[in-house]
Image (cartoon, rainbow, N blue to C red; front, side):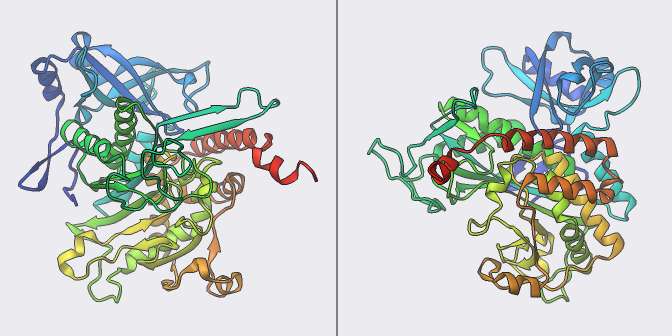
Length: 494
């Protein structure tokens, strides 16, 4: 794991250890010339978490544009950014995010991730997700800590083919998934995996090993995002996970966005399609984005306490208390789609119960306990298991940070750890232990965020929260007014 305070992406590996490499603006222009870069891809993230880009000619890119930004964005065309009457915006590249895009070979292209500013010298766009994550980093320092480290575990599916038909909902709706690994595959040439039986299978059942190898190589060598492990996940039909190393908050979010970008593009090279939908396959495991976090001060992990039975400090417990106290409102940000709530159901290793525990994957917060002792103090962390990969990582990390720091500030006790399998408890047993549930639907989660939003105010503007609620309510309405195909099975002859 990487704990270089204030380090910027990318990294390179020397003797098995990650070494940060920081590019200045001068370094970027030197590399553009040396590597004969023809185009610069300016990338940024919208409020919904989608990666956007515009491309400029490298020979027209100037140091002044790097410093002042480029007037290249109509903010009214990005959901949640601006209205049409005031929509001129600036994209300001961050030189530390420079990377050559390896699959663009006809005309050599590099990318730069950008911060979003208003035009007319009005400052930073408040709903720029990257700006929100940077604000979260600054707020942390006002609370007496130096840094936080974040490690998202992003799961995803890779299908051979997927189609859907929803353009005439009054006539009918459908979707179809094709995968060589799936038990419904009719080719008869492979080793199909049963539902929920896809964890760590060897080749040839795991058909995506080479694909993941290529993703790791691309992330490591071109984008400086270090990956230490990859594997097939629990679900059938191509569910994967590639583990990326820890980094500070904004860098980790940059890394998660780049990870999704690379996976989708490498999948295209393999004539496949990757998706971050949390629950594309019925009756099977969904995809999560388990989010690991620790707080640091004076080069010490503030979540570690050698004298505690679980080696969990009081600060970490309060941080857990903050997340648990605000978990129902956080759901609207960390599980922001209607599809998210098909994942958040008991029985599929998805956390639906608001509790904390070491090693227990039925709780919403897990304290990984593979190793003990001061030798491993650096890896003591909280794993928040509710987020999924449809979420915006900049917003997720910032919102979780706000909740955790609120817990520390107000000394929110999370109660004792739960060691039992919560899925096997009766409702009465859960009530007796004070274990509450996450919201069952996106609409319910949005109601919770409406009423419990004050904890976000040091980092999120009220207008940004309103925009999040507005956009997600529209999605919830879109789905709620359409019949589901399975309803015909259940109710047609009623």
